[in-house]
Image (cartoon, rainbow, N blue to C red; front, top):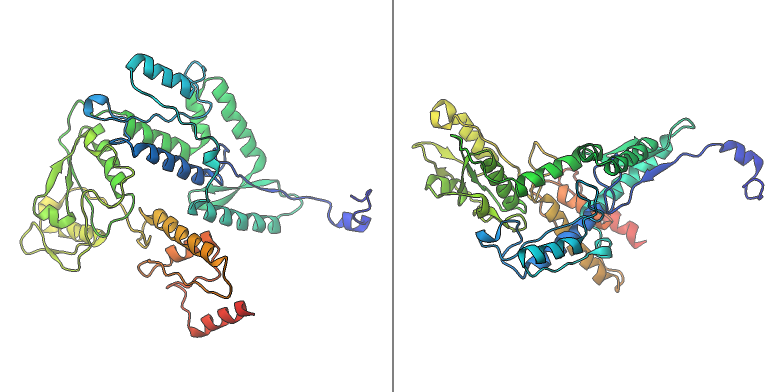
Length: 416
């Protein structure tokens, strides 16, 4: 640029180095060094929506056998899929095989660029915002000796990962695939990919154990319903059955348990539960206390408090000396012990979509202010995350006290 006369020699001397920070945008999530790439979650939303639209014409979208009563089966094939011999597996090949061998009416739907369309999901909006901030901070803290890096996601934290290390690892994945070292390729993809793949195989492919154990498990939903409850029940039931345990589901929470409202579950009883909203077992949030199974002992209906009181009562009741586990499920994401609770992400997406509609309506008007109130149970997670996702001008939360003067200063600034 000095030769072109764009900058002076003294300016070029002051800036003799260039720092590079990368953000990975890919719906394929195929870059090593990060749990999620920007765009992957939105693509999953499009795939899920398309699959559910297809399912609307059948009794259920499951991989159970026809002998169990399923009228609809869905097979999802990844682009570029190959068999153990390295031969490509195309959707048309699978379709022809099903028609010829099984005689079923089969259709092929190629999503293509549908996966890239639509509005970004709340997760992608928050992820890209966090990564953008981290990228700028990384550049400001960089020195001439700082190597190029990529902003990745590890757990729930934005991390700086050496660029060349990620590139080399990504190349190693492709090399392992070409050499048919599939197990190694899965490990190179990272723990997140490996865990997802193992979970899918366990829940979809594995059949109930032939030998039975002496263990019995009971599963119940407590408190207000939250998205994901039914998927959690399905997973718990199938994993337990795969290990040979007997599984019971309890209807209507602790109250149903006290009344003996138990039902034994089998492998196909929970088919199709993954995408169902609400609580198929039935749950409710009540303000009253419940006379439980043991006379004279009162239990609160909250899941955390209920299980805590059950544990504390072990000294008086030997029957309670059994393993107990709580899966946090609340749209408010206001419970300890976890970064995310079941239902929180769905709630953020619902709030985000509502705000998007409001913004669309407001785009044709002038001098209007829209105030949106979210739920949260005295926790600012929903409001804060939604604010990032929609680009809100201000977010007021319980954890950060504010007064009327703060509101006045905000509106005065934007009026000017």
